[in-house]
Amino acid sequence: MSLTEQIQRDTKEAMKSRDRTRVAALRMLSSALKNSEIEAGHPLGEEEQRAVLRRQLKQREESADAFNKAGRREQAEREAAEAEIVRGYLPAPMSGEELERIVGRAVEETGASSMKDMGAVMGRAMALAEGRAEGRELSALVRSRLQQ
Image 1 (cartoon, rainbow, N blue to C red):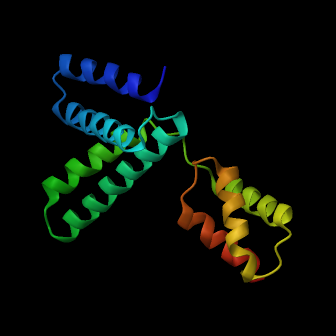
Image 2 (image 1 turned 60 degrees about the vertical axis):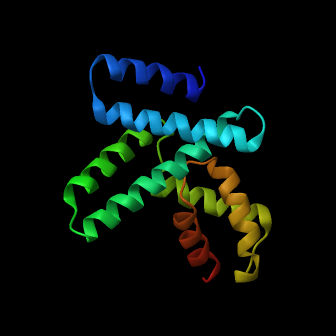
């Protein structure tokens, strides 16, 4: 079952149970996926769907942070709740040890020896992570590894 089908099925279940927060979040995800599909001009593959969900997650987290800073707790809590719902459709993030192994493998495979090679290492590390790691986390690890 694709992510889109799963989200549609879960939306129906949330509507039956009258879970307004979940319904709103799932409708937002459905809309984002449909808009991305229209922009792409073709049905989205699973990795493309996950990329859309990652963008939505990042937006929700940034919004929650902005609302917290503005002292708007209710909106911040709503955004955080939506972020948790989105997170449920994404693969679990990698542990620190897994990230270290990926960075080490990427450095080895690219033959990197200095900061000049950071782009190549990052490209390989992101491919190895298969969307389960944040770019900023990998970037920090790659940078520290190449500066040694």
